[in-house]
Image 1 (cartoon, rainbow, N blue to C red):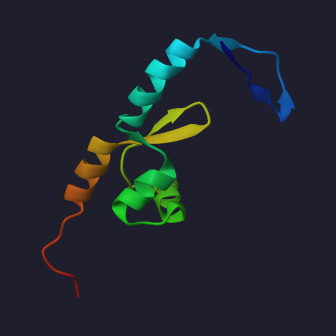
Image 2 (spheres, helix red, strand yellow; image 1 turned 120 degrees about the vertical axis):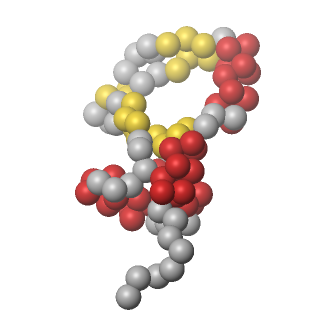
Length: 93
């Protein structure tokens, strides 16, 4: 068994969750196939810098995102939809 511990404010906390090796073995492939991307992964997918994607998130106008605690995730379908909405036939004057 693997004991997963959390960190609060930089200090170690006693183990919250205990996962068996079997649970970890089942979770790893599922996570590898996850349609959720981090800001860095989403920016790479869209050909943007992570900083630009963060700016779009803060100011609005960027792809939909989800917050899971302090983490931000983008669903691949939302990135594709946002990219399609951003299509243009020519560059404006």
